[in-house]
Amino acid sequence: MGTPERVLDHRPPVAPAATVQVEIVIPVRNEERDLGPSVRRLHDYLRERFPFTARITIADNDSTDATWSVAVALARELDLVRAVRLDQPGRGRALRSVWSASDAEVVAYMDVDLSTDLNALLPLVAPLLSGHSDVAIGTRLAPGARVIRGPRREVISRCYNLLLHATLRVGFSDAQCGFKAIRADRARPLLARTEDPGWFFDTELLVLAERAGLRIHEVPVDWTDDADSRVDVISAALADLRGIVRLGGGRQPGRFVGVGAGCTVAYLLLYLALRTAMPAQAANAVSLLVTAVANTTVNRRFTFGVRGRRHAIRHQVRGLLAFGAGLLLTSGALAALHAVSGRPARGAEVAALAGANLLATIVRFALYRSWVFRARVTPPAVITLVQPNGSAR
View 1: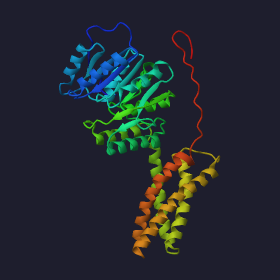
View 2 (view 1 turned 135 degrees about the vertical axis):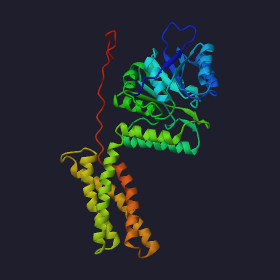
View 3 (view 1 turned 45 degrees about the horizontal axis):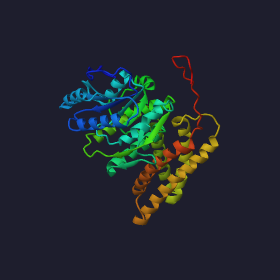
View 4 (view 1 turned 120 degrees about the vertical axis):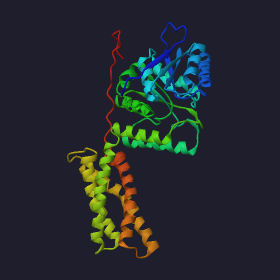
């Protein structure tokens, strides 16, 4: 987790006597322009429309502009605001530091641009305060959400969440929406296990929460894209990919790619050997059938960890059906090549087949994960929690 950061804490002149129910953290870095208007807007909402006691904590993570001065001024001016400064950057680092030390029942955070409509705050935290749920997230990808953003951000967000479902098999719909809350008692053990100091922190915390069996409540939100977002999409995407691999999401796809590469080489070599005695389509079908059986067998054991003879025949039949998609793609590629060239060279046929087989491999992996080797879902265990007073629920 690196070198411990130094923290400066500026509290209001008079601290509230009672423990607040909700602490809302706004992590900021170089946000001197937006910080004041956003915090005042949130403060007014909490004062006028929010039924629970709340605190706003501005978590400045190593700003180099006037953000910290603005934060201190807001903490002096507004009674529900305090300011914390860390000497190292990173949204995840800031949230982990503040949430770990919080005395609130529920800890939450939202982005400083307030892209999410504040009317979603009460539906976000109410199930946590009532004990109905453990974690709550805003989602832009569930029915009922209303989102205004450009096609680029839309495609990136949807592709990222599809990647999470494919690699880590998560159940939540939107990992990146900057609008989340968690019960403090559930957060502390999870925070101790998180490692990412940056943008992947959200995803890591949610994955750990889901693996721990915590109940995750999703709130469809009204969300408007901030055109002045300072997020470096490329570096954030690379950090996200590294995080996914660290959480185990890269192991299975990596093994599948290794098996697929070996089978692709065998498929092409077998095709070239059979092509001297067969037409192109026949050689392709036989080569694909032979390597399909081998591919399913190896992936069953090596990639998906299925051992024993149980369901082996069913897996092979489903595997052959999955390879039917590959046959359609490769046969189509050959047909298109022959329609264009008439008598294409062997090298052109191999290139067309290699490209089509790459696409077919992606399709097969999705089918293997979702259908061929899908494990039967076991109902979650019932967990009894003993409260400090001895009562259980």
